Image (cartoon, rainbow, N blue to C red; front, side, top):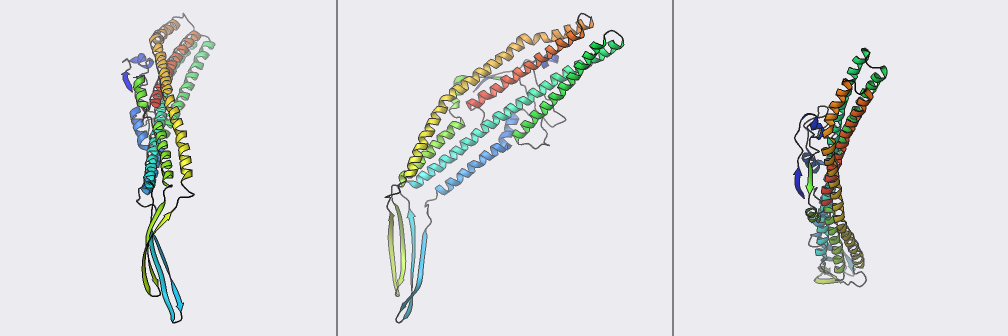
Length: 414
């Protein structure tokens, strides 16, 4: 479970961009931006995959509706009638009978147990489908935040390139710089504009993927807000303790109960079936009332198939469940180690790489204005600064995605 939260440093201006404090940036005039929590809630309410999984639970309930009926077979009513020809003419004979079969050996109880286990399995499968989808939604949401912030960084770089091009135009017109440097400034501005356009496409694609996961129509407004810098810290033992309730493990346990119910049902076929009934006969104008019992002797068919297949299935699934339980700890521990490593990487960049960027930006611009460095050197420094910012954004995204994976493996997402 979550042990604590580490909140982003409060800052303004360029340092806010460097620390990736993401704020609300509605795209193309779209409606109110949603948070990650709101996106997950929307997925639970309207995602087609989740709704379909929940509908399968109701299908499983239909099996239970049939299993709880007291008598599996309906009463049997038989009627025979016809004339009897005698020397004096003919008379009407008829036979009316009604009977009801009774199951023995606890078969009804076994069917109810199997139906209830099927409901439990479908419920667990629905929860597991929700767990997988919420991971996809969280990942898609974080990629939207990342694409949104990446676009902001590239737009800032584009503005710097545009300003530099205007300055270079004036200096070229004044004869202060050669045509080569002016063309370099022009190329840099074109490249910056192209990068902004590509980043815009990436953001639109990310929002489109999120819209699909949420089951939203193409014309529904969608924008995201959040702070990709917020990262969670986890305790391994708490995660392992809660992982025993992971829905995929519960689904396997429910399958074992179904198989055991099939074995129990097969055992019930070793007991005979009994049918109790009565007949009314009219024979040569005589009224006859009879009662009777029918017993099916389990000599050949004794539920062998149900017992054999149920036992084999239960043994197989027990092995699968044991293997899954063994791998849970490894999955969680590996995911947690990856998350901690990626957090350390982002922290290291924040502490050692980012503080010098503002200073380098100011120094390189002043040096260019004073003629200490040329335009190629200035463009190279700015490119290094931009790539460092983008790399930091990538490291924050990686840390955030790895946190989602930890919660997914531990069954926290539900």
